Length: 349
Image (cartoon, rainbow, N blue to C red; front, side, top):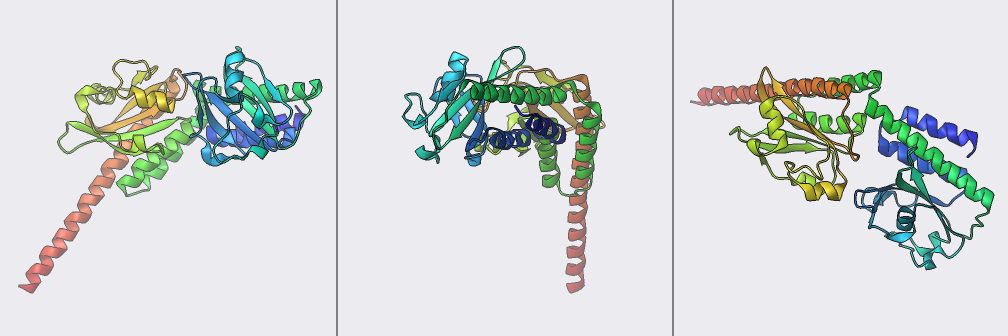
């Protein structure tokens, strides 16, 4: 891989907070570097299938397009562990799987190369296409495989930066989220800011906020940055029957290492479908008064560092204060309106 392209990838990782933004930058850098007509990055899921994470040709399918185990040329790369090169008429290949919205002429030639961790674990596939024939000589194959190795190295370094906790970056993220929440007087806006910015700045797959209902018995979903409708329709959960409820009752963060296998977790099917793995539930409370729960999910099984947990606890405290402040402002506005109405009615008598 050319030195300048490597530098571009490293700069992208250094200047990007969001994993999705980084992957999008990567495919466009690789497009220029390899002279391909299109470039995709697919990640391996828990069932050894693949999910599209970045694409220059069908960006609207990112996060939506999934290939089952062994499906497509990329699926064979996961099963066999090595690269696949098809020099011409790739759409006629017996393992070819057509993307929705992608015409056959887009896939004259295909290079599908594994993305591996330094440990050797295959975590994804780099897919390059040309509309016309592509002669994959030994030097070209070497160059493409070096590009895939560089992408894997930069991506995993980016992920590691979040996992070990770059404290200065986390504090900056924490301050931004807290400041923007404090400046908003609207409850719905505060909750949406909380999940959007927390997911972005801490690189979580999904963040949700549940608040206690008026009866004090259930946690009702109020905000999530997930676009999947199944999340937005998630039912209220009883406080005594969930991990989030336990975090609230015990007034401490609760961590689940893998929600796909944990017997206490509610919603295994959705977790498997969406590729959710580790979870942390952080209570929102003010002076021992419970308000709700912030739940954050990762797409890999991993630990939450002490710095990360501390940052989330601080953020939860700020969020609880902002939520209570917004509620007080709403009550104050209602009281003023009632006062004006009573005053007007008395004047009319």
